[in-house]
Structure formats: C-alpha cells, structure tokens
Length: 219
Image (cartoon, rainbow, N blue to C red; front, side):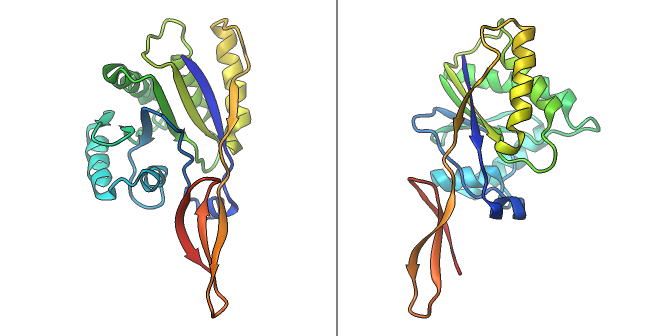
C-alpha cells in the first residue's frame, strides 16, 4: 500500500472560526473515511457539500455510529463513506484507536476497495495529536498488515505536517522500510473569489478551489 500525505493549508477565515469550509476531493477515489460529526461546519459536512450528500442522512448515521462506537459503512453514497466514531476516554481515545483503525481497514478489505481518502487530520485545532498519529502509522506501516488498498491519501493540516513527517520517520526506521521520507502532495487552496458585484456596490463571493465552487457569501 502506498501512503501519500495530502497537506492542507486553510484560510484565515477557517482558522479564526474553527470551521472547515472547503474539501479538496480526489478524483477517482473509491472510499472516504471521516469522523462521525455532521452538525455544524465540520469536515464531514464539508465533504457532504462537495459531493451533494443529504445532511439529514449523515446526521442519523453519525448518531448511530457514535452510539455503537463502531465504524459504519454507507455504501449508498459515492464514493463509499466510512464513518469512524468520535473517540472517547480519559486518555483522549488512545485506547480505542487500535481497534478503530483495524475496523476501518477491515471495512475497506470487505468492500475490496483499492483507494481510500483518510480525512481525520485535515483540520486541526490546538496541538497536533502526535500519539494518535503514531498509533495509526504503526498500524498502517506494519509490513505484516494485509490490505486491498493500493493507495491511502492521508489529509493533514499543514499546521501538523512537520510532526507527522517526524513520526513517519520514526515508524519507518522501526520497521526498516526503504524510505524514511513520506510522499507529500499539496492539496488545492481555497479562497473567497468575487463572482458578482451588485448595483448597490456589494460584492458576491464564493468559496472555491481551482476547479469547484462552494457556499457563497456577500460583503
């Protein structure tokens, strides 16, 4: 399995509000994994806007997923959505991570998917969760780990990229992998682009990447 880190640089608006607005989709991806949180301006709702998914379905599925604390497969959507519950516990959920990442890979294998967009660290608030990222990389990079995946795209907020690269180097040396340097792609940036100016002098903007248009706002 090839692991690619997709570095995401967020706008000042997103950082100030603590909300993710844009989602840079990867063409041809078979499955997306996201944290089960469909209320407000969350990464999951940003994904839903991109793909035109109904939010009420996602809210109901997220409630069920968090209640069961199990990975949920929603294969009525395209790409397939794999919901991962919000982790709980006094240790920040570290004790649950091994089981959840194992369940996620089991779901991918069950579906025989060959590509996964892993979105859980694409927008961060506060310090990067280094221990959580370490546990996940230890699982994914383990040479004995079997998977149908050819490629996993790991979204990482650029504010935590340095820490993730360092963790990757530590884990790859432990497993004696060929390279201690990960492959990194820069995700498209999102900006507010003016698309119209009203007779009264107001400018209408849309939040967009290089190819897509998202929710608009008026100034």
